[in-house]
Length: 264
Image (cartoon, rainbow, N blue to C red; front, side, top):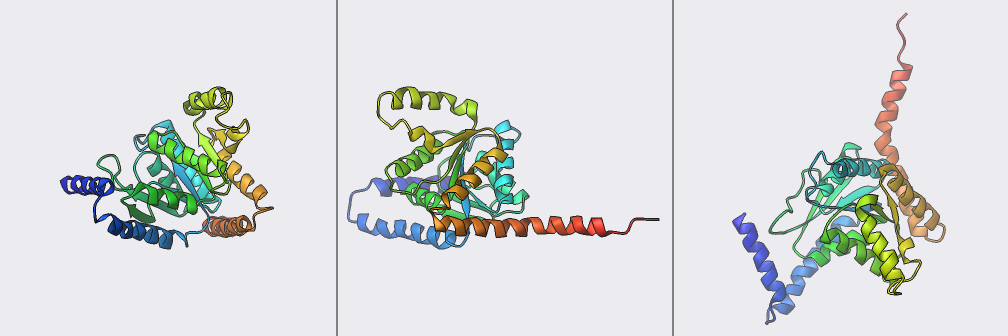
C-alpha cells in the first residue's frame, strides 16, 4: 500500500513538473495509448458502463449493475468498466455470468480503486486522459449508473464531444431515475432556459431503471443509426455472432433434453 501511494505521488509530481523531463513524459503517455489501443482494437462491439466505486454488493444499484452486464453480454456486447469495485464490479460480474466478455480499464489511485476479480481483460493506466480515450474510442454506447464526480465527468465529456461533433453521436443511457432527477431538472430549468445549451441537447441521452430496457434502447438506437453508418452494421453483425456463441450451449442442452426418450 505504501509503495502504491508513493507511485501515485510520483505520477502527480510528474504531471505538475515543468522541467527538462517534460518531453520524455510524452513517451510514457504514448505507451499507455499504444497498450490501450493494441488491446482494445480486437475486442469487438463494446459498451462502456460507468458508476460509483462505493456501492456495496447487495445494494439495489449493485443488483441493477449485475443485470445490466448480463443483458448487454447476452446481446453480444463486451462490457467495459473502470475495473474497480462497486457498480463497475457489478457490471463486470454480470457480463461474466452471462458468458460475455468483461473488460476493465483500471486506474492507479491512492484510494478506492482495487481491481475487481471479474475481468477477462485488464488494462492498467496511470493517466486518466489516456483511459478516457479508450472508453470512448472503442464504445458503441455508454450506460451511466449512479456515481460521483468521475462518473459525471465521463457523462458530460461524452455529451460535450457529441454536442461539438468531435465524436460521432452514440446512445447514452442514464440508469437511476431518482438519483439523476435533480440533475436533469437543473439541466432543463437552468441550462436550457438560460440558453447555455440547446433545447434539444437533453435528447442526447435516455433515462431508465430497467436493465432490459437499457440494453434494448442501445440496441434499437444502434440499429436505427446503422442505416446511415455502415460501421455500425458491421458491429451489430459481430455482436449477433458473439451472442449466438454465448447462447449456443444453452440451446444445445435444451435440444438434448427435448430429444431425450421418455420412460415408458
